[in-house]
Image (tube, rainbow, N blue to C red; front, side, top):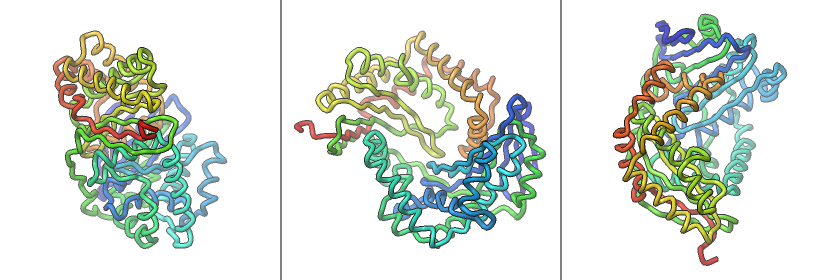
Length: 420
C-alpha cells in the first residue's frame, strides 16, 4: 500500500486492489463521518435500466448476511449516530455520522451494506413500491418535477438527463438478478473510495478496513466505465402544461467538469448572478419587479460535464415578464462581465462559503472523496483561497460570455396554459 501525507492530519492510502482511502483528523470534535463511495450511479446506466443504481441502494438496506433491516436501522441510531445513503450522477454513497469511538462499528455496518447485501427477490416488490411513491412525490411537487424535465430536455439521449429514480416501467423491468449483476460487477474495492473526517486516526481506519476485507484481492479492470461527455441541447424552449398555482421555470446549459480550472470563475459568477439575497436575480426579479418569491441560480459538476441553471416560480400571468427579465440579466452578464466591486464581493462570498462548509466533518468527508471521484488533485485550503483571489476580470468575462448568453439556455416551463 502507498500512504501519502497530503496535509497536516490528512492522509491518502491507495491499496493494490485499487481502493482509495482518505482521512482527515479533526481533533477538536468528538465525532466521525465516514462514507463509502461506489463509482456506479445513474451516469453509468442504460436507458432501459434507468434507476437501477438507486434501486440497488435501497435494496441493500433490506438486510445483509449479518443484519436484518431492523438491525441496520437500529444499531447506530441507539448510539446517537446516523446511517444514510444517496445515489448521484457519478457515485452512490453510503455514509455514517457517529461518535468517534463508534467508527469501527460504523465501518462494519457500511461494509455489510456494500459487500454483503442479501438482495432477496421477496424484498424487491415492496421496495419498488417505495420508490414509486418517491417518484409520485416528485410528480406532485412541480418545483422538483421541473428540474427532472429540464435535465431530460438538456440531455435527452445521455444518462446525465435520465431520472435518478427511474420510471415506473424501468423499475418494473428490473429483476433481483439485474441487481445482483450490478452489485457483483461494480461493488468491489477497486471501484470504491472510502473517506472519513473527524476525530479519526488514519492507521486505525486502515486496520478496520483490513479487518473487514477491504484490502484483499487484486485490482479489477476497468475500475469504472468512463462517462463520455456530449454537448447538451442548447437554446430550446419547452412547455409542460400542468394544473398548478404557479408557473415553474428552469433555465440551463452544460458547462464543464469540476476539475476544470475555470470552476472558480463560474462559482463566483453563479453567486453574483443568483446566489443569495444580494444577487442580481433576487434584486431584479423579486425586489424590484415583485415577480417571484423564489428565484436563484445553481451549478452542478459531474465527472465529465457540468450544469449551470436558474429557477424561478411565478404566477402564470407574469411568467413571460419574469422570463424576459431573467434573459436580460443573462445577456447583461454575458456582455459586460463583472465590475471590480462585484468581482471582489463574489470572491469573498465564495471563500466564506467554502470555509464555513468545512466546519462540518460530513462536508470534509465529501470533499475528500470528490478528489478521486472527479479525477481532481488535492489542494490545501490556503491554496484554494489563493486560486479564488487570482481569478481575474478577464477570466470571469470569458466564462460569462461563453455560458451566460440567454440564447444558449434551454428553458423548461411547467404550469398552466397562458390562456387558462
